[in-house]
Length: 307
Length: 287
Image 1 (cartoon, each protein chain N blue to C red):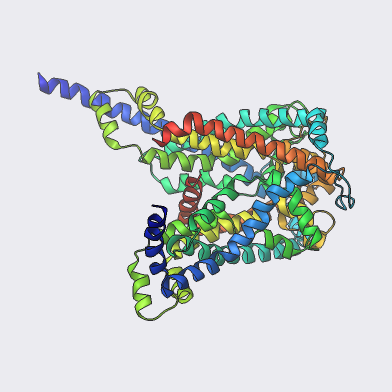
Image 2: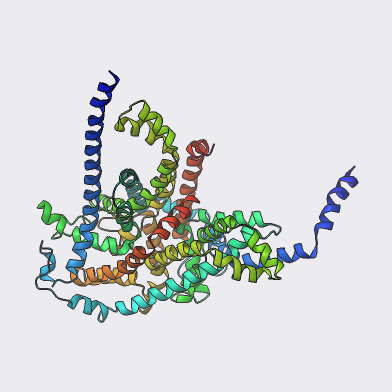
């Protein structure tokens, strides 16, 4: 019985191992060798290496030879660190603030650009461009406009330095980044809008449904896959926010830790106090958080949309 | 009866159409204005003097190009531009070649373990920079590649997004082309290089533009690799950040630096607009 099954599978397989197939496979391996080495060395290996480092007392010169693992010490240090709590709070506040704003502006822009308006390509380009410009330059311009004697304060007759005041900096960066990301959101909504079949709208116009009602009753619900796609991609992107806070605070996370984000916290643990073990532990915690969010996302809404 | 209904109906429809048009153009103009003001203001300031830079006047008075000259010479932006250009060009070329080779193999060649390897490629998208930062810094330090262009290029040789993008494009090319090449006796590499890569030109254009833009704008990894004490390796973005930190009130110079950081991407965008849009959507759809 067992012998027959073995020969049954073995015979066709050995006869299929022709020279041409071996040659094709060899070239296949040759072509993917370089990319797989890069991915292995700089993505997959670091994944495990970061976790390894996180279990040691690890400084700028590495771990002292022969030192034992400190177990979960770094993890408990991070989780009990007041500054880490502030970084989590700031990052979540930023994400919860920026996500609805960029989605609303992006959707609004997609809706108007999707109409039969003159110069569509121009409007689309004008709305998209801020998303392509360098984040450092956009932040620099925002610092200038939002300085205590800058344009925004002159217009409103105030003198708040929006990006160096603890109470306003997160929200100032929310507004800035809503501006610099909504163009990309617009592109995804445009693609989603164009995927809606036109006969749905024809049915609505036969029923003489008003435009406002058509939007809320038909377009908005039908854009659901688009909403969730944007939420996942831009939500995870928002958790990585770093450049703006780094520029605003000269890399310090100040004033009063108001520009501490998860990414800046990891950066400062590594290059401010040279505690690589702590930084790796913080990175691992953030990864687990993002992974859990993605899984929850996928289980709750992603699977329904896939069917 | 039917005629009267239609007559009273048409003008109402036309009027609502006019209102709709007016609302749409008003929204378009408002957003465009809001988006344009910061850029116009930035350019204007770069031609102002320092005392003039805090005035709420659009036109520089007096008009001066001194900020531009200083940024170019004293603040070393000429070197930063050279560094940024070098890195962006080399990394873009590597991504096209290596991503193209890998993408072609995953799209067309059959070899044992292909699906597992492809899952690994997609798996790299799950590893965030927050996690990669420390191990990559430690590895590059071990290999004496920290504070070098080689180190930065090495970790950016190819991305999973680019490889995936090329693979998807190769899948859409009919197999007839390769079969014709095979009949002519071309080997696998020659088929890739002489037949498939030229056919994938639209995909290459989109990839090249987005990768160039990504490398030109990158701040995080240059900061990690060059930022710990190698000013001669600074890219435009690092140089601009440094100018911000060291001379926070030199607004004309800082604005000139910002224009330099943005302008090349604007120029490329204006020329190759449709590739940007196609590439951004395709790169995003992969998830």
